[in-house]
Amino acid sequence: MQNKLKIINDPVHGFIKIPHEILFDIIEHPYFQRLRRISQTGLLNLIFPGATHTRFHHAIGAMHLMFTALETLKLKGVQISKEEEKGAMLAILMHDIGHGPFSHALESMLMDDWHHENLSLLLMNRLNDEFDGELSTAIEMFQGKYHRKFFNQLISSQLDVDRLDYLKRDSFFTGVSEGNINTQRIISMMNICEEGELVIDAKGIYSIENFLTARMFMYWQVYYHKTSALAEFLLVKILERAKYLVSQGENLPAAENLKYFLYREKSAATDEDIQRFTQLDDNDIIQAMKSWQYSEDVVLSYLCKCVIQRKFPSTIISSRPFEAEFIEEKIKKTNEIFGINNGNELVHEITRTLLPYNTEKQPIYLLQKNGTKTRLDEAENQILSGLITNKTTRYILTFPRENGEINS
Image (spheres, rainbow, N blue to C red):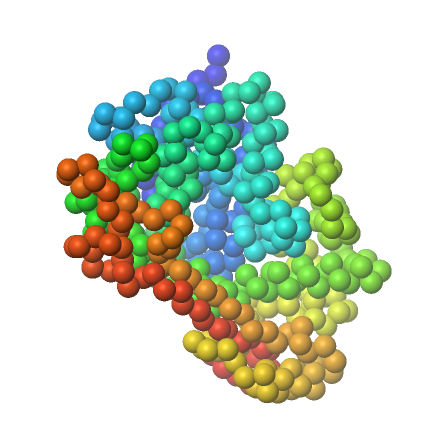
C-alpha cells in the first residue's frame, strides 16, 4: 500500500507534513496538479525575475499554515476534532483550485463572470462526488456554512492563512523584503473568543499592524506596481482582441481548449466548459501569444510582442485621472504612427485602488486579558491601524513607446 503521509520540502516554510491521506489524494488529482502550471503572480516575473512560483506552491503552503494555526488553537484549549482538522486543511488546500491561466487576469475573459471562488466550489463539489462525500465538511467551511465560524475566518477574512502564505511567499520570490511577515508570531497570537470567532491576543497588536502594512506595501510595490498592472492589463486586452477577431470570422491559431473559449458565447457554465477549463493553463496562453505576434491584425500583433518580447508600452502614473484631451492626443498620435484608426485599442488609462484595512467588513478583534474584545482600529495602543483605513487610487496611462519615450 502506498504511503500517503508524505513530507514536502518547501523553500518558504521548510518541511510540510501531509497528516491525512485524503489530502495526498487531492494533491495527486489532475485538477490540483494543473495548479503547477498556473503562475501565482501572473506575469510578475517580467518585473521581478524570481517570481516564477505557482498556485501549487501557495496552496500547499496555506495548508501547512492552517495545520499550524489549528495546533496553536488546540494548545489554547480549543476543541478541534480530527474531522474538523481534515476539513479545514482540505478547504484551504482547494481554495484556489478554480484559478484560470495567469491567475486573476483572465478569469472574466474566459468564463464570463465566473469568479475563481465559484469555480473552486464547483470543482470541490465534483471532487466530493468522486471521493464519496469526504469533502462535505471542507465545503461547508469554505462557504461559511459550518457552525463554528472561525474555520471560515481562517480560510477567508482580513487575517487568514491564505494571505499569510501569499505575502510571505511572494515576498520571498520577488525579493521584496517589505512583505516578509512573521507568520509564526501571528499564528501564535491567534485565539477563539466566547462567540466562537477568530481573535488575536492583545499583545500581538504590533505583529498584526506589521502584517497589514506589509500587505499594503506589497500591493503598491509589487501587485500594483505600474508595470505589473500594465502586464496584467495587456493579457486581458490580448484575449479581448482575440475574441473580437474570432467573432469577425478570423481564424486564429490556438490550442484546442483555448480556441473553445475564444468561440464560446456567454452562458451558464456547462459540463463541457468545466471539462475544458480544467485542461487550460498558462502554457496555452503563452503558446497563443507566441503565434499571434505574427498576426496581420496590428493591435493583436503589437500587444503580443509587448508581452512575449517584453517590449512594454510607456506608462505614466498619477494620483489623479488624466485629462481627456491628453489621452485623445496620444490616441491621435498612435493612429498616425501605426497607420490605423483604432489607436484607442493601444492607449488606456488603468486604475488601481487599495483599501489596506476595512473596518466594516470582518474587522480584526483583539482579545484582552479580561476576556473582552476590542476592534483593532479602536485599540488604545494601536499605532498604524487608524491610518490605513482610507482607499487610495492610482491612475496609469499606457501608450506605445513610439508615441513618445517615457520610462516604464
